[in-house]
Image 1 (cartoon, chains in turn brown, red):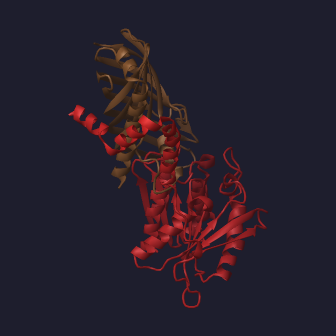
Image 2 (tube, rainbow over the protein chains, first blue to last red):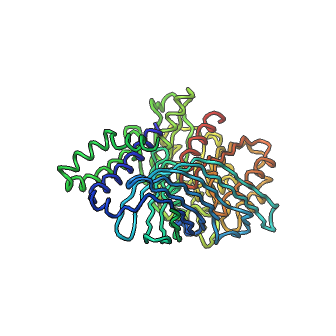
Image 3 (tube, one colour):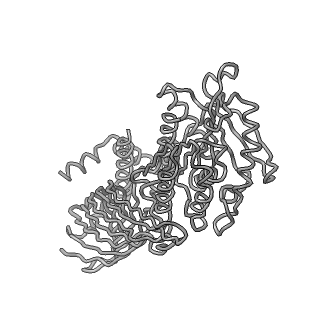
Length: 204
Length: 291
């Protein structure tokens, strides 16, 4: 049942972006679409809620057709940058690693391109905390987990030469936003939206 | 392979339908997109618990002066003449009542056991005041007054108006986050009131882990009581405050309370709010099986 929901959302987004692309006009697309190219775009960014996770990522995008891209996205997230010692609770380490691949479609204008992709892959989360309150016993606890990771990505490339500006936003769809019919459970996804800026290189 | 996947997407019924509409009615389609999104979200809205089995009243607390809306979910075939029932007192009741009441009904049915009365305590004061044991930066420290309200005003009224068991072992308290903190406070400082505690993502970090000190101070008088405790957390609650105090509290209960039946659960791949309902389900299952 859950898979049906994921599939519905995925198809809905893909079709929506394809529909928008079609509306933009086929002639314009043909005119501005560059030769098939491969780009690599490292970037840094934040998870904007609660503005405390630092993301370092790399996006490899291969535009093989005017409306078909293949993408590979790798990210390292240094979680909870600003709150690593709170009420005698020390964060020993807290990070995530993510690797995803996906397909997308794009719109082109004279100076920029807008890509919309669906990505899927895995995410490894690891963190450890130690309670070091002198009043109590010292207690450490850690969690390491591997989870599916899939979602939607918007990627803006500005510049048509060898180097270009890259902006991207990733919205995770896992865990599914609505948990057990309680819409307030959406926070898990909102918390992991990432906004990233970087400089990309066109390889061919 | 990728091209065929792409073609498949473009020939999907939904796409064809959208494309057909687009050709003739593009402007109408623009209006339809928000409607589709609203319908998608609306289809995920929670269901309400049966109105026929729900009763409600308000009660003004003499302890805090606040007026609390109370809802009571009755078991199906509730029969006050022949049977008495256990009770679950539910914090943040306005958010959790339907989900808890519906699942108590389902779980008790699945386990072929007697259902309970779910007593939902709505908001009279700000929850950060009512649910916190001491005054600190994050809360007002009104837990003692709130517990006095529960113990001396709410429970007597419920037990006089409904057919419920009046034993400590037949009462449970369920809370999430600061509600979990209040459930922990009930455990340490009002242990004679409840025999069952479902603490979900409890804010044990509050006020430099004051709850650990309260547990230590009251351990001698509480440790010989029979307790049923469920402690739940989201596996990805990694905001630098939840996991270590949660573990410390769990270890203390496990090692110092010989009469305790305790279960700990880390809900996989979920965070603070996302883990709430899955932990409620696991906590209720543990409660119904172990009480």
